[in-house]
Image 1 (cartoon, helix red, strand yellow):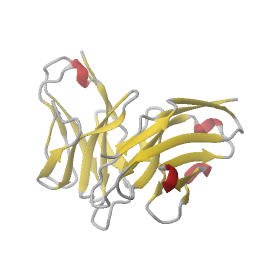
Image 2 (tube, helix red, strand yellow):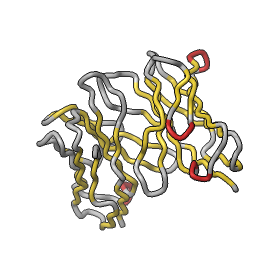
Image 3 (cartoon, chains in turn blue, purple):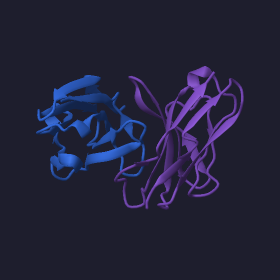
Image 4 (cartoon, helix red, strand yellow):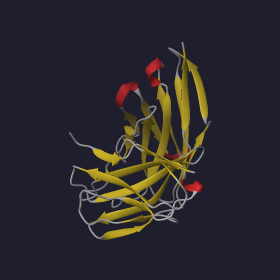
Amino acid sequence: AQSVTQLGSHVSVSEGALVLLRCNYSSSVPPYLFWYVQYPNQGLQLLLKYTSAATLVKGINGFEAEFKKSETSFHLTKPSAHMSDAAEYFCAVTISSNTGKLIFGQGTTLQVKP
Amino acid sequence: EAQVTQNPRYLITVTGKKLTVTCSQNMNHEYMSWYRQDPGLGLRQIYYSMNVEVTDKGDVPEGYKVSRKEKRNFPLILESPSPNQTSLYFCASSSVRWGFTEAFFGQGTRLTVV
């Protein structure tokens, strides 16, 4: 069965510092991987996705993630945090391109301090 | 504008009083699903639909019903709500005709059952 683990339910960084949100997945077949962001009182917005093309994926708002098969990881990074990045971030996986089912991690709340 | 619309956004109800949360998408997507979001658990799929008149259980279907009479609409029905169904609910849709690429989410419905 597929699963996703996000290490750290809360991450706090200073404005301008590196953002690193960790995601590890478990899948018996090559997965499709996603990062979604949820701002307060809003739905989920796609940040970026990996679908077996380039292993380094660039997304919106300066975020990027690298798929590392050997480590079964898909960590999300941003070189310099902005106050507007404060939100909850979800890593998700699907193993089939024929369904829309996503398996989500537990979520990581990012706090950005001035 | 492509969107998934849920109503209502907020709902407080009493135990046992039947309720329906509506979901509509304007992207002609085949696949629609409902998720519930609970702290520390991420999002979990309740029910999904591959197309009109085709629905199936997700990971946490107990206490819920759905129907898919039209391609654009996918209502979630709680026949007899209980306090453990207090949660944040999201409807999502995606196209799987040419392979799944991403899921689009509604704004969410925060349900409180007292």
